[in-house]
Length: 310
Image (cartoon, rainbow, N blue to C red):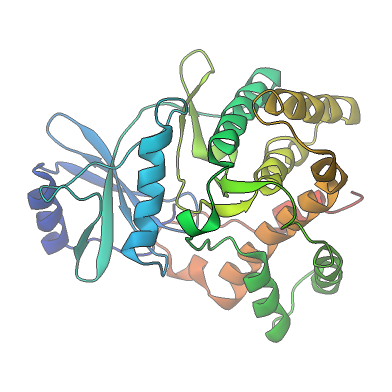
């Protein structure tokens, strides 16, 4: 949710007219690296304003918003607000814009058994609900694309620490076929900073489904294992207990197959590499960190430990 595109007064005027609101406060949201997002205060309500940075069609972007409407009864999500034309996406100056209801909550500061079981439940419910949805029904592209970043880095002349080791590991994980595993709609970016808690440390909101796409469920599972558990430097005993707890609670809502368990470690490596390569690409090839406004730098080096000694 970094800010790559600024808002100008004529665009703010357009938003006020389209959504019949009066904007009193608008602030950049600077965490994340894929879309431009703003916190907005109106007279009586608060909102999150998104400017879409992906090169996707309106129909592709709408698929995410339709999904949010479908799952809102059993997963806590923030839905897009319709404009005066009864549309969820507005266009002005070639910018695709959406307005979401703002839901206040607390950031996750501590990973424990309770929060792991909760994210396992909601992820299991999402995957169970979408397991019969086909690629043709949800055929939107994701920017969290291992093959794209791997190929861009391979053909570039950039040099960076651990380059050869990372590319060798990429060749290894590329030899595995995950497409034969159970698939459906995955969140694709289910990091702790895309989840908010209520005052009792229960999950209140899961947001930023903009990279959701049709893929093997094991990739969402691997994100949780990597970025909710392994990245936190738990000792061996606690790490394995949390992973086991997560898999057990997830399986109450969608049973994990033996084939998925066999490929789980490789999937974790592939997902770790995907986000390492995304950050390398953004930092050294696309220069997105330099383009973004007030974005906090996220170095790929912070993630290297996910592939060390695994």
